[in-house]
Amino acid sequence: MTIEFEKDYVVRFGVGDLFKTCNCGQSMRLELRKLIHEKRIRICHVPVYSCQACKKYELLPLIKPHLLRYIASLGHGAERLRVSFADVNEAAYVLREVFRTYVDESTVDEEDQELQARCREAFDERINMLLDLFCCAQGMKDEEWMKQIEGRLEQLSALKTLIPENSGYFAR
View 1 (tube, rainbow, N blue to C red):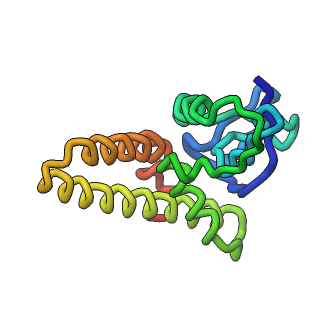
View 2 (cartoon, helix red, strand yellow; view 1 turned 45 degrees about the horizontal axis):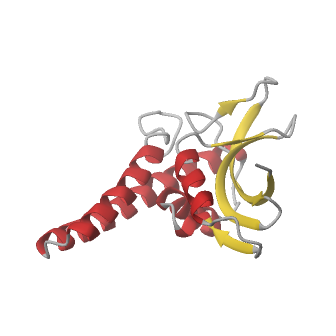
């Protein structure tokens, strides 16, 4: 399997679990990248850790299984495809929306604080919206829809746990 990455959106998280240290000792940052699979499938908005020093990229472990299932679902045809992972993964969708609307107006420390706060807020809003939809599906006794919403909530909850909430370093 051949995988290459191109930059979509870049964000730097300086503290917390979204911050990762590379094997070379430098910090890695969370980015949304374009994954190129077998030179025919371009999957945009894939969350990865990126090291600026050694140029190493690493998929977020929480999204890797979902991404692999998605690639397998695209098949092995000869046609070229361009798709967005944010269309099939809730966490990637929320991150894409936050990065898309984020304007760099502050210093690095303030930028990290503001972005962390925006990510927490966006994840909370999306989770609340999905919980409302779940109640609606439950009221309609639509088991399939409830199952789909549960899967989307699981994707969001897993990544949301990486965003630090109780650190005095981050804005609330």
